Amino acid sequence: MEVFDGFRKGVADNRTQFFVDVPSGPFYGFNRPGVKTLPGVVQNWWRQGMAGSAKAHYEGIKAFSETDQTEDLKAITVPTLVMHGDDDQVVPIADSAMKAVKLLKNGTLKVYKGYSHGMLTVNADVLNPDLLAFIKA
Image (tube, rainbow, N blue to C red; front, side, top):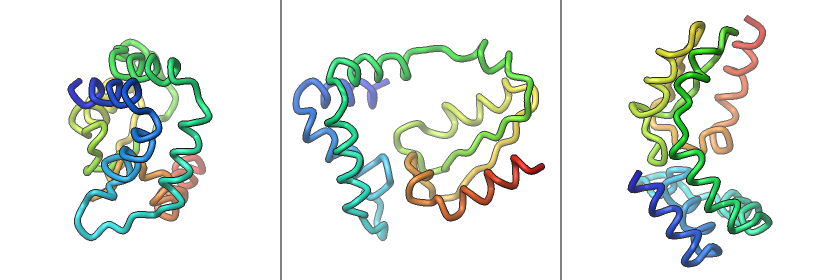
């Protein structure tokens, strides 16, 4: 919760800087040693963030960090692929994917070593084939 409280504070105090700091650091793992920052990815995150409503961002953080989705996950019966990086600094794997896959009736967990929260953007070359293989299966 501390991380999300910090996100809300960042949005409220200096939204434009928040939309530079988060993607430059923990969201894509660019703060990790040896990980090359991709300026275009950071700039695109900033662009998307600045196009939205400050109130919607603030309230959205509240919604995704405080909503209990337990019953929703239990109700899903179709095959579901849960993909998660084990270096997600925004939503740690133990607090999300490990719990979610146990609640799903037909869930499969695929863990990506060293991948960040933003793995679908920076690791699309690995994840897209896995998604397609799951869908085809």
